[in-house]
Length: 268
Image 1 (cartoon, rainbow, N blue to C red):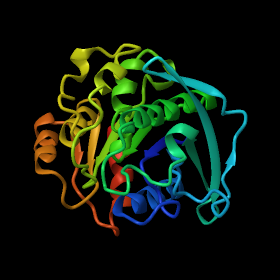
Image 2 (cartoon, one colour; image 1 turned 135 degrees about the vertical axis):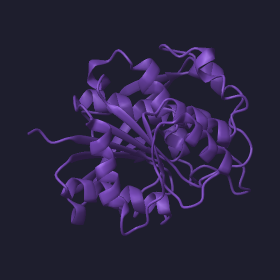
Image 3 (cartoon, one colour; image 1 turned 120 degrees about the horizontal axis):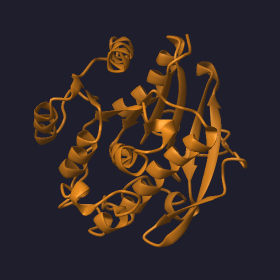
Image 4 (cartoon, rainbow, N blue to C red; image 1 turned 60 degrees about the horizontal axis):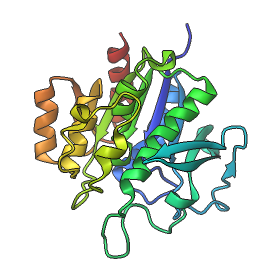
């Protein structure tokens, strides 16, 4: 029987970024699922805080070179890769000099959200999907981690709904306690109006605060996982009211086995 394929799209993965519950899960979950006999691919942003030399990142020329248009502007897509040797696992990095060269992840030195985080997350989400297309690798499950990946379910269910590569893919979204303060750029809704996405599809993003972004991710996902023991109560309420397949929080000793069973149940 052919191995099931799991695509991980994560905001943060250790050891490339500091340890959090999200970066820990995003590091060890793919390895654990791979060891259980599934095939995995892993994507994350190449934030400027990541030391390329120490982590032995190198550009994949055959995958780089595409332009993604956001708000009528071309943005050059660069793909880098490295291996986590002890896990026998590759990690692909979505990169662009304009979006990811700064020596910070999501906020400036004063803790203020970068004004272009909306475009950065659009670029990251669409970039990961386009590279999977280029690899001609058909994922059975696409599992997203962190709010930087929150638009991926929307893209897959709207912009790529007629793409045969994804027609049978199930989208899982993990909700963490990665809440940001304030709102994303007010122009985000206009920038999302392309390739099958209408204003009515994203009306929830008014305003583009954390809770509403999570609701968009939940609404366009097939199943939800609670990644942290404590998450935003408004978001949790929305998960429950959605009546979608929902896996409650699992600790470090049980989450790999539980997630693997959850994937199997979704695909059965």
